[in-house]
Image (cartoon, rainbow, N blue to C red):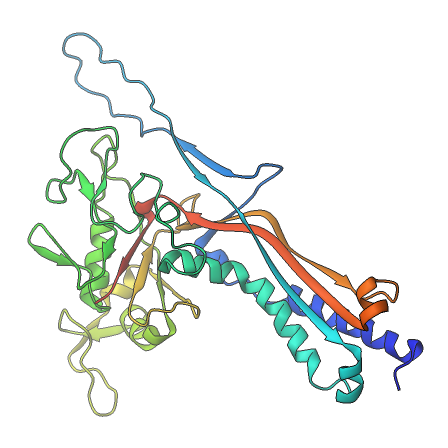
Length: 337
């Protein structure tokens, strides 16, 4: 029989279980995400101006340039996760089933940002609208024709380098007569890495993009390990050739490995075939996580709480205000068949 004296230890243990599970859960998205915490603002506003032009040959009068400010706005949205426990059911259960559910509830609140970032990348969940899917330049973030110079009225062209591509799905893109990206392979990885390094800024000079990570779904784990982390690769340009005993045929030095790319296995990605090449070496990483209020846990477990007193019901409520949002589009490319 449940009495105030023997129920109190369960209350304490359950609440402690939730908090310990929450604090111990790993944060896996930090490697490719820049976190921002807002103060009292209801929106996050990013502001920037164009890149400083290079010096020109002084011929005739000076040419005066002025900065042209640009802004990008993202609005954190409220989210909640609430879990309740009926103490009579616990009495019948003997406290054996529900503790793991509480810990899983805590884990869900901790991995919540990673799931929302996944939804932004894949245009699902709460982040499907055209406005949300727009990048900093006003175009859809995944686009085949981002302008290198958003202040110019010149026609955008991949061939002349006045625009750039960060979407190589659908089998890749033809740029200057060569296919860049496509299905995961040695060739698709190398062509994207090499292409991203050629992206130009407003002044016409290279942006300095340095691809550092490949984020892939669990379904590409073996392929990614073979391509990126093997010491040796097949002599052919395409994907490695394997013998019956899983030994490589015609193995040579693995050029991809020497590029220093690191793998990020994102277990939450829904697509089985898409992968993402990211430059996470800059002060701003490939994607942003904007917190107006981080997830907080409020336990309503005191005997005097109305839900406990009137309904013999314990409640743990989690809530936050959050939005994932884009970093500059040249820092990340996606690819796939």
